[in-house]
Length: 604
Image (cartoon, rainbow, N blue to C red; front, side, top):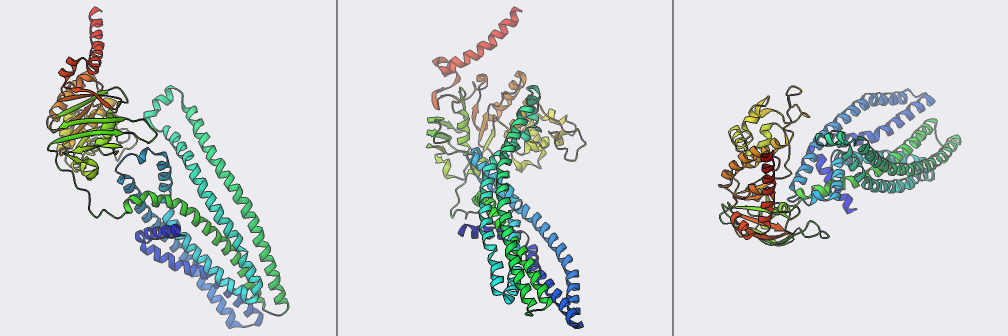
């Protein structure tokens, strides 16, 4: 009950906060709607009794009442529909804002790598579009149905306490059954959400340009389509099972309610036949029986819907709880400009308790203004070092320090504001060329000079300037954004990589520059030019460079060779080559490949 009350408060808070006028209108309409059916029955009774007794005044009271209802009811219906649609729009804006802020508020990446979090997020996203509005609507509908049941119930009990009580009690089994069905349906939704999420993934592949080439080349359309249908059918099987249970339960309960109403009607008819009531009373009782049966059934359905909505809305509340928590009494301090350097002190890390260690006691020093290159085999832990430095994960053991301060004790946003980075798995945004660079520092969104300077650093200024609409050209064909169809341009892989480098270069206030495989997709000539420009950029930053192309790291102040999550050897290029260790072995292996190519061309 405490959980339900909490969810109701949150739902009402969102609804009344986003659409207060619509909320007030809905409450008024709830009361009016609950009494309108009762008024209709009493006006009918007045007309029938007036005709029977030849009482004109009574007849015209009933007629006037019907006239008022005939005019007011349609207007109220349209007003209710307008208020509900407007409330839905306003609530959707608020819930989408809250949900997006909540997901963005998670400082790390662990949640986004958790499949159960994705399932809860999918349910939360679905609930965000309707749950607050539906909670309020259902509660108001319950209130309206309750008013109708109580008002007509009093009428039935007045003529026959036993029959009236029997009609009202017949709704109890239905209520209990519907609550259990709602819980079963909520559990079914939680079981099927991974299936629908995978089905959505397979469907999205059909429109994914990155997957289009392989799907067509390898003939994967039927394969992925088969998997899509498998997930869809599995989910629908569970839905069908739930619907069959509901069908049998609802049919049995409807039969019970109908039999009880028939018995009650027989009792009332016998009373009127014995002279203990008028024909108008019988008409009123018949209307009351029908209304109580329908309203009680509607009340039960609304309560069942309320239980199902609670389950869905609970996921939304849990996901958004991170932004609803009270702020810290003492906010975390901001990171100051780097003055001394970075330090990894005996850092151990693994992505989950049951997984292998990725880093095993890693210790590194990166003095301010220096450049450290990380090299090693795949899986050695190089990219993990970057993720830890950015605060995406917390070391399992050990500490990372910024000028001697543990980075887990400072504000993550201020830490990241002092880091510029290009990642190996960089993003290709379906924005304009200008916006694709400007997202590296949104303060430069209206500063075209800064954006062009960053593009020039990545040797992309002339490329972007020659596009159909220059820097305003959309780098996608999925969105025209006001441009003529076909104007959008799709860049090559190497051009996208250079755009990501421009994004990193835009953050002028950064102290640390992270370059994770910055030239892996570039041709030789472009790689040489980019490295020349990046060397100038690295001189003004403390930089961390990761690359499998060892010719790009030889100018680093220090090179650390990682193996098994540890530093195998460290030193300058010349020192490591002189020591004849793993770095020298890898460097000579790469160089020999170029030497053999040169020798082969010379012989030919």
